[in-house]
Length: 290
Figure 1 (cartoon, one colour):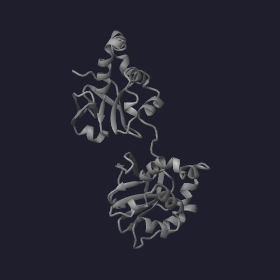
Figure 2 (figure 1 turned 90 degrees about the vertical axis):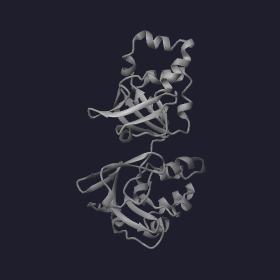
Figure 3 (figure 1 turned 135 degrees about the vertical axis):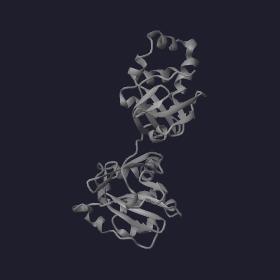
Figure 4 (figure 1 turned 120 degrees about the horizontal axis):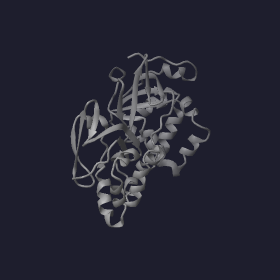
């Protein structure tokens, strides 16, 4: 794999060479990861990245941190924002040693729980919106790849992410009626197979009206829980075929059919929408437990 070095502020990064030390010592010795080192210290992650690993770190340079809006770094370094800082930094770390030769267009799970998207195109590698400017800076407990932009995980939970998408108004309303909003704002992770407003529109009008009646609240909750699985199930795993237990108790079967990922009789129309506590797959049909 060929990586093109970028001119300008990040040119110094392209001259990085491996030194005999762990990931932290190697980054500090390089001389252009001062902000990253300070952030790792504030987040209490120094000891973790001095551990046995191995780790792969996509390391933003000082110039990369300087691209953030004014005051962002200072705000993140405040003690009250430690959780968010930890999440951002862990989003730059993958467990295991991923060398440049092993990189292809793919997704990789990070220590933050969410995945990063790696794209190889035209001799360049991008990680989310960041460009890799230097690869394979070896350390005793892993490898560093230098990037020119700080990458950010989604900090919104499943409910906020769904509401922000604008196509789940009916689902959001039903979750509130069933008193399930706080559950899906929990730690998780959860996988939500989220029917769009159009999917709910396929149901007979009287079905939705009946579900909204107070005496049917348990049935409504059961249907909604049938769309939720404990743990993060990504589309690539679902496409291979799986049977997983829903929060409602019944099992859900996933498979690949006609080039689409199917969840029971519903087709996934948008996959792997990540949230801070799980992942959403958009489906075109409401699932009804038997």
